[in-house]
Every structure is written in structure tokens, then in C-alpha cells.
Amino acid sequence: MQGLGTVLRGAGLACTLILAGCAGSSLMTQPSVQLQSVELAEATLAGQSVLLEFNVHNPNPYPLPVQGVRYKVRFNNQNFAGGETVGAFTIPASGDGSFTISVDMDLLGSGAQVASLLRAGLSDNVSYELYGNLDLALPTTPSVAFTQRGSIPLNDRLAKRP
Image 1 (cartoon, helix red, strand yellow):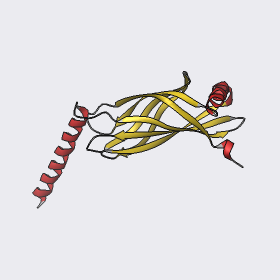
Image 2 (cartoon, helix red, strand yellow):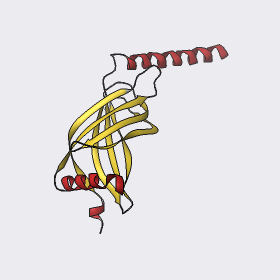
Image 3 (cartoon, one colour):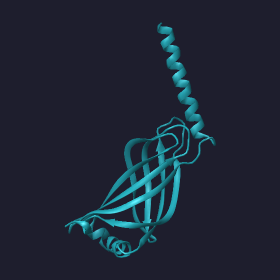
Image 4 (tube, helix red, strand yellow):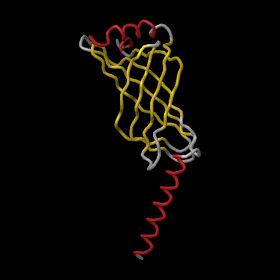
């Protein structure tokens, strides 16, 4: 019976490698990443915290295990935030998933930038550009680049507090 277990493990490994090979080739359809919401979570004299929520659509018939995201966001033609997240999540096959990034900014280094964003965003939509890569946890699969442009309203949670 031990031989059957070895065969099954080998078959499972072969299926995983075939799936990874397909994901890394032209058979993989590009997932889309979209900025879903921007929310000013906290503003104090010491700094600001902004939450960026992203939606990912996976058009492929297999799940995409994401092990990290590298990103850069521009608002109103100004660099706003960029970095790299560490944390795994999976986008279901032929489905959607989301993730949120918290961007903490100090008042001295980013006060004018946040003030400009607030002036533009509280009354109108804010234009954005999003660039990055999804790092997949599939062997031999390169990271998946994404680019998105659009406009989005700024949600100010602080302004809604009693």
C-alpha cells in the first residue's frame, strides 16, 4: 500500500507542476487589479493613516495563490504611496478577492500631499494611477504585472464621526 501513496503523491506533484507551467505560460489570462476605495482612517498632528482597498479578478479556471504585492499609487499626478506587502491570500478560480493596504504617513513628510488629496477628494473624484506586481506562490511562475488608471471618490471616515 505504501507504493500507492507514493504514486498518488507523485501524481499530485505532477498536476501541481503542470498547473504552474500553464500559469507561467501564455495559457494564463491576466488577472485584473483595481483600486476599490481610498479611506482616510486617521489624522492626527503626528501623521495620517490611509487605507487603500484593492479588488483582484481572476479569470483563470484555477486559483491564484498570492504571496505578496508590490505597488505604486499616484493620485492627481502625484506620487502617493508605494511599497511591498507580505502576506498570503488566494484569489479563487474564476472569481474575485480583495486586500487592503494601510499607508502611514508622517505630517512633516506628507502633510501638503494629503492636504491636496483631501481638497480634491472630498468634493470630487480623485484621479489615480496604479502600478504593481502580484507575486504568485506557483513554481516557475513570474510575477503578474498590473496597471490601472481611473478616478475614485475619497472616503473620509473621520468626517462621518459624531
